[in-house]
Image (cartoon, rainbow, N blue to C red; front, side, top):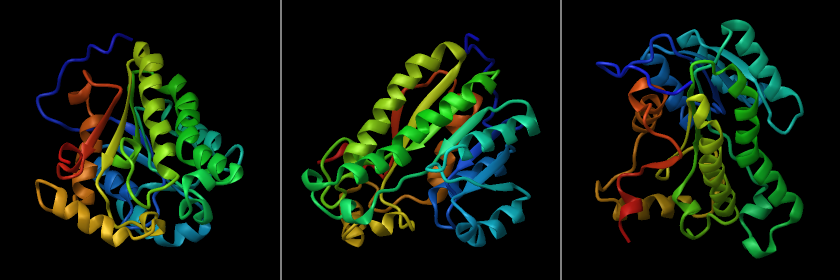
Length: 262
């Protein structure tokens, strides 16, 4: 696989098949990505955490006729079961969107220097290493190459007040992106991190003073506003399309320009 595909005349995802991990509700980044991928013609299987989350997600996926599976990456075997289902259904995968992050609140709200060993390990396992695991499971079935995408944040590159332990964890995730792009590039598999600005999701609500973080982003951003789920989804769809076949190993910001100004 040399990755030299004919470039499309327009960006579309007709014939693409893939997996979106981590839909929580209509405000989640994973939902914004899923919605845009589906609208551009992709066939998608989605996951949510558990039956409690399913109550919020099932009506959304049912409306799009998208199959929804439960997947808790902390439970051994659930990731591999999801991949096996996709392979049994389609025979291959063209993209994976990983939109999963978690840390114990006690560790997330405390100083990094006082984070517990267990809490830090759990955050790293769920938020970063699960991306490596899903890549290892899916790569053998990405017969035509494809895209692996994860969600990061500016706090991976610079210290952001109250982001705490998730900053080092997201930095590890971005390092995984670079190393996996090197390892999987010969297979035509591209790997990226998408780095949105602050978005009012359920997961983000666990960050202390998140309202102030959003207000600060609006003041700082050259565009003078927060980004939308549709804008994040549009970038995701582009990176899953054949229009992006010359790109890999990057952290790509969609944050109104916050990352570019001091």
